[in-house]
Length: 131
Image (cartoon, rainbow, N blue to C red; front, side, top):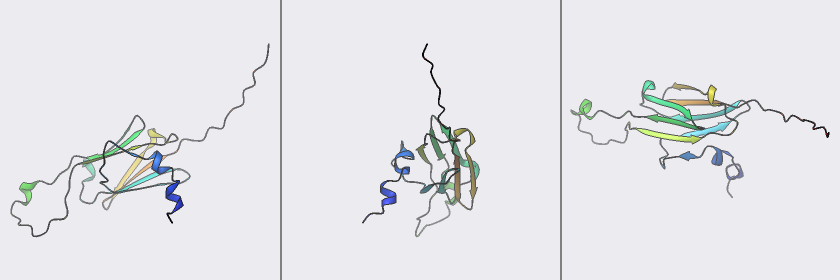
């Protein structure tokens, strides 16, 4: 039987990937009381080559970094499974995301993006008088 937490998980609807069928870099997305966290595996990427920005309620994570073939022209690879390549992943942000205060950190090849939640606004009752 399928795990129900994934069948009804709002992340599937809220953080859907846009513009790309690529699943690179692989990400985990979770929520806590204060906000949402996206972690991405980016081993081999320089921090200053990773671009993160929010625009029109969409979070973009991208890099135009790629391997320089000239740097490794003296190598004759027997197996080459690792590579650094350009990528872009985009995620639609939830309605309660505070886009102005998104923060990110990068440590040991793992990018962590924190998207704080907007404070909940309680509905205000306004009485309308009849004239």
